[in-house]
Image (cartoon, rainbow, N blue to C red):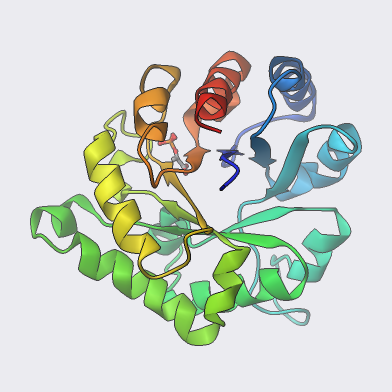
Length: 246
Ligand code: PEP
């Protein structure tokens, strides 16, 4: 049985004061939920405070990116050992915004994935196709290539622990969601490259109103939530939808 995971991606949002209010409200909202895991991936500067607030709660925390290097002259970068020191359980790698806006290649994403695992944290490998690629019938080719790059540098067994997040680029922050059937088809394809026990979560405009139907699909094991993770009531409603699956 795969424990559903609902992970928030705050992106570059937040402030020390608003984070406190948001976390307090999320903690209150998920207090009684059982059988699922919840996490928030926050901007680096907040990790210390978030770790302090969330220690011994049922909300895990993590980061949205990291360097593939472990230390050295890489101004502005943050390494896996640094994130591990802050108790991160999850680290997103290969988010489409990193791939598209910062030119992260499949090879860089694979190296980041390895760095996360080597430091005892769980990588959340984000992958997905653009609208152009979907329209050209290339979805499986694209996500297959993205997955193969990571498998090429890492043992397949890594995916017993790692999480895969299918995030069609055309659905992220657009209000346009993949249909449950579209998500299920890609998740089933991805599962054939990993393990029955690998959690494969869906991301792309998941909201309280659509979460339950997406999570009802057999190969959808929860969600990676962007915009809705900034609204405590929305995030907790989505977590409740995942709980009904668990
Ligand atoms: C994301 O940032 O990973 C994401 C899925 O965003 P949104 O839920 O806002 O589409």
